[in-house]
Amino acid sequence: MTFSDLFGAKKPVIACVHLLPLPGAPRFGGSMQPVYDTALKEAAVFQRQGVDGLIVENFRDKPFYPGRIPAETVAALSAVTREIVKATALPIGVNALRNDALSALAIAAAAEAHFIRVNVHMGAVVSEQGVIQGVSHETLRLRAALRAKTLIFADVGVKHAAPLADRGLAAETKDLAERGMADAVIVSGELTGAETKSEDVDIVAAHTRLPILIGSGTTPENLHKVFARADGFIVGSYFKKDGKGENLVDAKRVKAFMRKLKLLSEARL
Image (cartoon, rainbow, N blue to C red):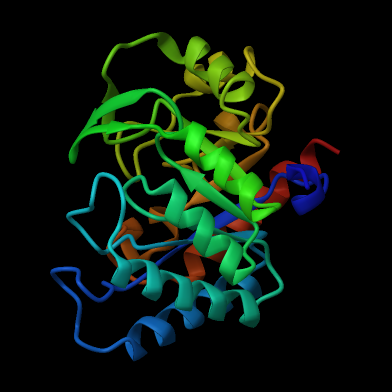
């Protein structure tokens, strides 16, 4: 399976389903039922507004584990992801924050999701959770062992982090495509909700033929800046009330974004 197999010729909008705190997280409310209810409600909003895919994330489990997430988080994230897969007709992804690609891949395989997002697939970064090192060698071998068709969307210049040794976006991009065998690359701003620099997108686009996703900060007001270069958009914070990541989804903001995307798409036909 390829990116185009999953999304066709369109520039997909992939919305983030930011789960309520899961069992074991500091802010877990004591019951899984609100987690299921909120996730399914927001997934339904996204589907009604014409979003093309979803990423399920343990976004409210802060502070995150820098590597492997514990068993209780794997279990909860698996269960909710499976419910979303059953409830929608959309391609579904998994992001096990902060950087547990192996658990994300196993969850996707068990839940019959379609892709994973890996924040640090190769190399090493200094992040808000300390030093995080990519394990692409393990992730790709696990995918082969599971006989999974799960796609790997990997960040280049990942947000909330700085490279341990800065080799530049061009070298990182080449490595992700060639040695990391990623299926798409994600370019983001410095922080959650921060606008992605168009010049960063240009650098990445010049060094790979892989699909390029804009990973943060895209709004109806700035979408035109990266629309031509991008092959898709991952949207989290903008879709929330007041544009704040911790809030719940606001259907009006989803509708506004999708309307602007349609206008830009039609203008280029």
